[in-house]
Length: 183
Image 1 (cartoon, rainbow, N blue to C red):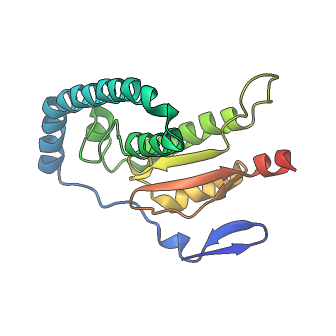
Image 2 (image 1 turned 60 degrees about the horizontal axis):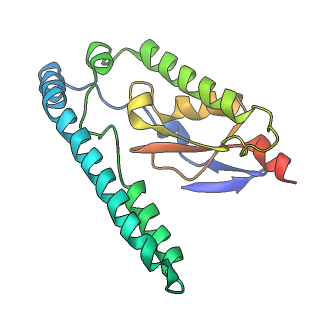
């Protein structure tokens, strides 16, 4: 599905990454109502899971005297925490409910998202601080009304490179100037 050409990843069928179909109004309203009811419960569950991770890590700190335990425990914690999603795919926010099918809204949303990420990635490295983020994942909820092809076009014009992505979930990008800074 993707190829490495001219120093960056390109997708063979990126033009086919079109906008998601417009959802039916009644379906959208039901999803919004479910979001209003279930999302606070979801966030409480996430807080409980976070508290459990902290308690487990406090007890695991005692076991760090065992050789190799710390490295494996960190790997397990990273894998567990990377699965946590603050905004689940089933949720529908008020702006999404109001602007379903509005391509101008989603274009502005993608442009604002990429603009903020570009500003962060292009910031000068400050002494004693970590490097600016070089990777970016654009979630489907940000571009569902315009499609992944628009995200790729807008990202390439801002200096991002495309990484292997699943346009049904997210589009992964890499700040190309970060590669030059490492050299």
